[in-house]
Image (cartoon, rainbow, N blue to C red; front, side, top):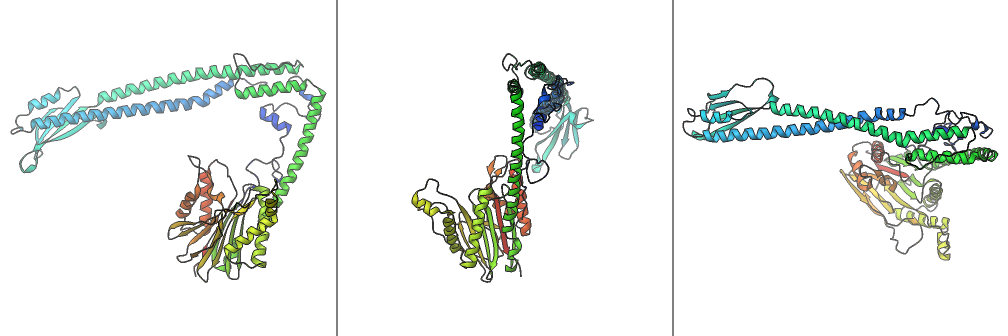
Length: 558
C-alpha cells in the first residue's frame, strides 16, 4: 500500500501532526526583511525606538540591487545573443558553401558536356582556360576512361579541406557505354571563410552593444521604479521613528513596482495604525492571543485527522487477504488529503475472491465518513446476507447507502437540504475453480490486460446512492474467462484524471492503459509502482486533483 504525506507538502513547524500552525508576528516581519525589528511580549512598544524600523536596511547599499541584477542577468543575455548570432552566421556560411558547391558542380557539368566530342583528349585547353577565368578557380584535372591524366591546369590544392570546394563530373559515355573520362574541379573557399570570420566579429560587436544597452536600461529602470521608491520608503521610516506620522506617496512620476507598492501600502497602513498608540498595542496583543488559540485549534484538528487516517487504514484490508484464493494482488491507495473518499475491499469467502473498489462523493473528511458507511454495508451484505453475485451486491449496497443517508425520505418530501451523495463502485468476484471473473460496475470500469492487449469493460453509467432520476440503467454482471492468465485493474477515476504534460491535459484511460501495457512484463507490484511513478512524472508540478485507489490482481501459476 502506497504511503501518503499527512499534509499537502507545506513545511511544518515542530515536525508533528499539528501542521504548520498560524503565522507568528516574527515570521511576517522576517518575510518583509525587517529581521532586526524587536518583537516583545508587550505588544510592540519597543517598535518606536529610534532606528528600529530601519534596522534591517542600515548598512545596505540599495544600488547593489541593480549591480546584482546585472551580474545575474547579463551573462544569460550575452550567452543567448551570442549563441543566436553564431547560429545565424553558421547557417549563412553553410548556405554559401552549398550555393558555391552548386555553382562549381554546374561549371564542371557544363565543361564536361563541352568536352564530350571525338578527340577531346588532345583538344581541351580552351575549356580548361575558360574555367580558369573564374576568380575562385584553383585546379582542374582531366582523366581519360583508363584513369590516366590527360590534362591539368593550376596547382594541386594542399592544406585543409574546408578551404576549398572540390567537385567532379563524368564526360559522356564512349564505347560500350563506359565514361569517356572525368573532370575534377577545385574552387577556393577562402573568401567564404573570410566572410564568415567578418560576420563573427560583427556578432561579437553586436552582442557587446546589446549587453551595454541592457545594462543601461536595467540601471535606469531599477533606479526609477525600485531604488527611488525604496529611498522614499526609508526616508518615511526615519520620520516615523520620530513620531512624525507621514505616509509614502504611491503616485508621481517615479511610480514604484507592484511589490514595492504593496510594501509601501502596508507601511502606510501601519503608520495609520500606530497613530492610535495604545489601541494598536492592544490589538496586536489580542491578535497574538488569537493566533495562539488558532494554533491550538489547528493542532487538535491535525491530531484528529492523523488519528482518523490510522482508523481508515485499519479498516482497509491488506493485499494478503486474497493469497489463499490463488491470486497475486497489488494495491495503490493515496488519499488527496490526510483521509480520503476512495475505499477498497479484498476478501476470500467460500472459495471466491471478492474485490471491491469504491469512489465516494468528495474527499477528505466527508468522503472518509462515506467510506465507513460503505465498509459497514459490505460487511453485512457479504457475511449476513451472503450475497455473491456482483450485481446483487451493488444493488444491496445502493439500498443501504440510500437508507443510511435517508435520501428516499428527503426526495419524497422535497426537502431543500436533501442529500445527493453516493459513490461509484466496481465489484469483481473471482471464481478460480470455474475459471471466470464476474464483474459489475456502477460508474467504474474494469481494465483487463491479456495477450499484450488492454481492454476496458464498462459498468452502468450511474453510481450508487444519489437522487433517482428515472434514467438509471439496470445493474448487470459480465463474465470474463481467466484463460491466458490475464491481469485485472479496478481503479477510481482519480488515477486517470491526472492533469499534466506539456499541453496540461488529462492523462485519461488511454494514457493509463498505455503505461500498464508498457510494463506488463513486470511483477504485479512492479506494475503498480511503475504506474505510480509514471503518474508523478506526468503531473510534474501540477497538484493531484482527487483521491486514488487501484486494486490489481491476476491468477497465480500452479
